[in-house]
Image (cartoon, rainbow, N blue to C red):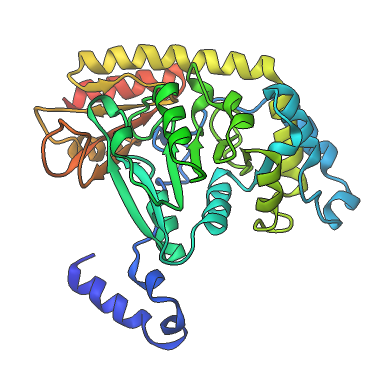
Length: 373
């Protein structure tokens, strides 16, 4: 779309009912999710979905939940069956768990609860671009804190007087993890300022911050079942914080933000830790293999602790590679940021984020990349 077309579209939205929409909504671009193409021949490596199906127990749980009474009645508002199961598996207090319609719902609840209009949200960059969209929707300001070399946080220069901090760990698009001690320093040194550690990909890493939650009133961990538990289509996520904080956040969420089927599926998935461990091991093994193979093909691959890898090149633009793969029915995510980490070339910073697929899918990706390059 040309600049002129964008101006004409914006002018059109300012008339009629659209003109009554808040100006900050009219002025924002909005979050753009990864492409979802309904073509069974597509090799889909662009949205970090798990390439393996959910636990067989999930299907049994959904079938058992499909009763006339369960569908005609409202679901349990707090998802107590899931909270009890997750509490046992993760060794946390069930009352410290808040359920959501995917972890994005949790991020929205947190933004609504903590950030006033005109307030401030801070997050490292490059990272998850939804954080900025949430600030814009709220009518708040957004501070993008540039990551240091090797994707470390500038903890000594982290902004003060922030209403809410979002820190993804592992990060997207890099797949890197932060030192737990560095994160604890940030949380500990900013008083009551809330820090949200977005652990959407933590199940593929070797460490997390769950054990710190009881010690810090300003620490919130968010998780999703979309990645490691293969439930992206169900939409289920959760937060872990001190119970007194969760009780306040319950006031902000939709009364029934998770349906009976999603609660049943999520409970069954998190209870089947044997299946979870098997799938995780396969993804980590494939991640290791594809990292080495992409490096042989000339990509600069950042060591990943997630279910994707971040690839860049110094000898050519990567966007044409993304486009050539798409023509061959392989979707990866081309991502571009205003700036990269400290030490990266000045100007736009871009690369390819490639999800870890099955071994067969990665073999096809590598074969097509060899042909393209």
